[in-house]
Image (tube, rainbow, N blue to C red; front, side, top):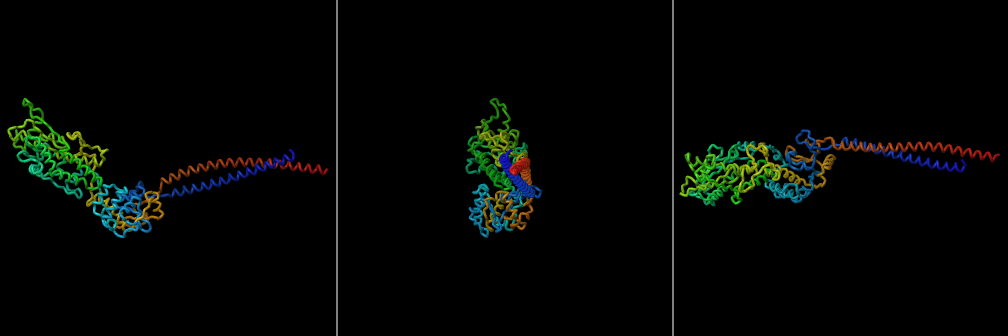
Length: 580
C-alpha cells in the first residue's frame, strides 16, 4: 500500500473509531438515565406500599367498604347516627360544598357567620335553599319546615340521634298497634251503635225513617255476629274477618244512591283513614308521608259515587215458576228483612248470605230486587246497599304499598274497572301478607325519620350561623378531602357526648380508621412491574449495541495499529534510500 493511501485509510479508521466511541458514550449515558428511572419507579412503588386511606366504620365491625366522603358525612343516615360530621378550616369556618353554600346564601347567612342563632324563618329559608340547590326534594323541605326548629341540636343536645327502626309484616305491626306498644301511637275505636241515626242525620241524604229502614255492621265470619258497640282497626283487619255496612232502603233506585252517598260521608271513613295513617306514619319520613297521602286520595275515590265505582246486581229470588234460581235467595231475603225461619230482621240481616256479594267487591254493592212488594209491606222485597269496610282498609294499605314500592314496579294492585272492582282481580295486602315489610320505630321515645333528618340539617345550620362558612368546590372529591385531612389543612368537627361540636384531628375520631390503600398498592405494583420490564428491555438493547461497538472499536484499533506500522516502515525505507 502506498504512503498516501495508507495515510487516507488511517484517517478513515480514526474517524470511524471516534464515532464508535462517541456512540458508546451515548449508550452509556442512556443506561445511566434508565438506572435513574428505575430508581424513581422503585421509590414510587415503595411509597405506594405505605399509602393509606380513611374509611368510616360506624358500627366498629372492621368494615372497610365505606371510604370517608363529604356525602357520607353531610347526608343524614344510620351511618353517621343522624348527626353530621363537618369539616372546618383553621379559622373555625365550616367547609360547604357548592349546594350547601347555595343554601347558605339563599338564607342570607354571611360567610363570617352571625355569631348567634337566628329565627326559625332564617332556618326555614336555609331548608328551602337546600331544595332549590338539589340537596333535598321540595316535598322533604316542606315537611322539615313544618317541624319545630331545634336550636339545641349540636349546642348541648344529641337527642335526635336515638332512633331505631325495624321492618315488620302487617300482622307484626298490627299486633304492636292493637296492644298499644307502637311508639307514640294512640289507638281509638269507632262507635257503631246508632248507625241508622248517623246515616239519616246526613244533611244531604234525602233519607228518613220512612224510606231508610235499618243498617248494621257485621263481621263476616259466618257466625251471624254484628257490631252494635264499637269497632277497632284490629277488628277490621283481623284474619278471617270482613266487616261490612249493610242497610235496607225502600224499593226505589234513588234511595239506594241516597244511602250510598250518606254512607260515604259517615265518620267511620275519617276515623279509618286516620287510624291507618297513625299506624303507618310511625317513622314520619317524607316517603312514607307521601305514600299515605296517595293512599288516602286513591281510596277516597272508592267512596265517591260520581266516580262510578258501584257494583249493581239485579237478582231475582225465584224464576217464573217459583223455583230458586241460585244462592242469591238468602241475599235478597236477608237484605229485604224476610224473616222466614228467623226471629227478627237483625237475625236475618246477620246471616252470611247477606254479605256474599259485598265481600267480593271493593266499593259499594247495590241489591235491587225486581219482585218488589207493591203493597207497602216493609217486611220484605226492599232494596239493599252494602260495602266492605275491611276491603276498603285493604285497598288503602295496597295503595300505600304501591307508592312505597314505586307505581311502575309494585306487585300490588287494585282492580281499575270502575264499575266492577273485584277482590279476585286485585292483589291486596292483608294480615297474612309477608312480602311487603313496613318500617316501624321500635325504640322507646324514638323520634321519626322526618324529625331526625330535620334535626340533622338544623345541626349544620346552627354551626354555620355560629362560626361562619367557606365554600370549597373540590370537597366532594373523596381523595381531595382525605388528603386535606391527612395534611392537617382541614379539621374534623364531630359532636361529643356533651352535645357540642369540637374541631379535632381525624385520628381522634373513633369511627374513622386509616388503613392500607390496597387498591393504590395494587395499581402501583402493576405500574412498577410494567415499567421495570420496559427498562430492562431497553437496557438489553443498549448492552447489545455497546457490545457491537466494543467489537468494532477493537477491530478498528487493530487495523489502525497495522496501517500505522506499514506507514512507519515506508517512511524508514525512504530515509534509507536517500542516505545511500
